[in-house]
Image (tube, rainbow, N blue to C red; front, side):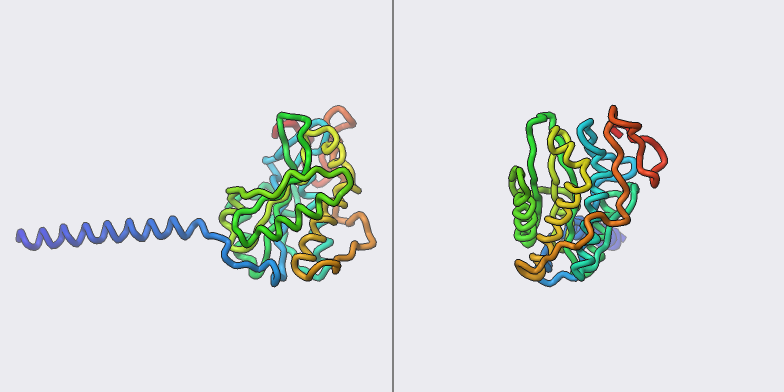
Length: 258
């Protein structure tokens, strides 16, 4: 009987240790590293409009809510990429809240792709302005550098650099992924620019140029003849300048700090 008890005890310990080992393996597998470098072969671009729904992102009186500006730029970018014969998957196409892990699932379940997340920046220091592009895996660096370079070719732009970041949508991506900060809504000049259709069109155009040339080589990108995609809704004016109502597709007024 004693021998039997010891054997059962030993077996139980072995099972527990095995379970812990498996759990450890599971934890590692939940945080994949972008090891598939598709920057020269991708056929699809996952375009991620930052924030949305209950998450408004940055919102300053100089510019529109970040969630509206990112969606507008993302829609324009998506149309330009399709016109350049690339397939596009959008993580959101309207004012919907999409959890970060869902965005990760979308990018990782889209075969042979790259991932581009659109954001606008914010700072307590109103004087700070400029573009920034972030990446996590080394395979994403060239794409991030190309996007930053094209944005910084815009007149009056400020280059705040390409940086490594641990954002979840970058850290968990199995394909090249970048996050683009298209200027500071907290800066008076850039906040007002973000309200402009033509400025958001230019942002989308530069990002599209970077993506297309990363895939097919320099000099191949051509700007479409149209300047305003039919799917783009006008952005609401900031508080104190008009009614401040949301686009018709949304159900209630914007409120700072949502």
